[in-house]
Length: 67
Image 1 (cartoon, rainbow, N blue to C red):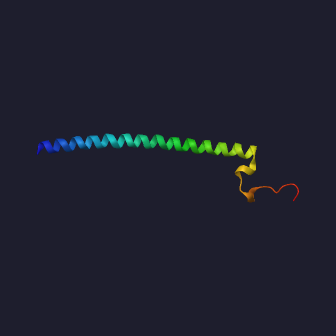
Image 2: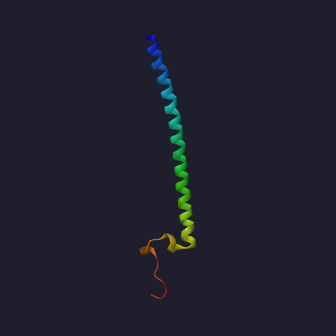
Image 3: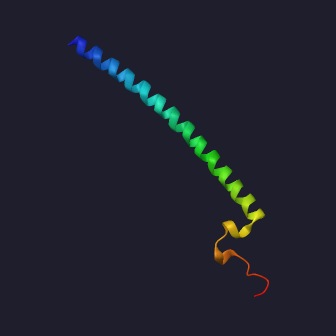
């Protein structure tokens, strides 16, 4: 019986370690996702400044001067 309890304790410790490692990975990934989101926003802003028609929807575009 004691061997079974020891085995369960070892499994529990292993699971706790694995959960902690996965939690750290998810936390780092969330930071990466937030950083990438900010970088995409900056890229989009720069693209709008360079060539607005590439990124904007048609209804947001100013009509050409001959209209």
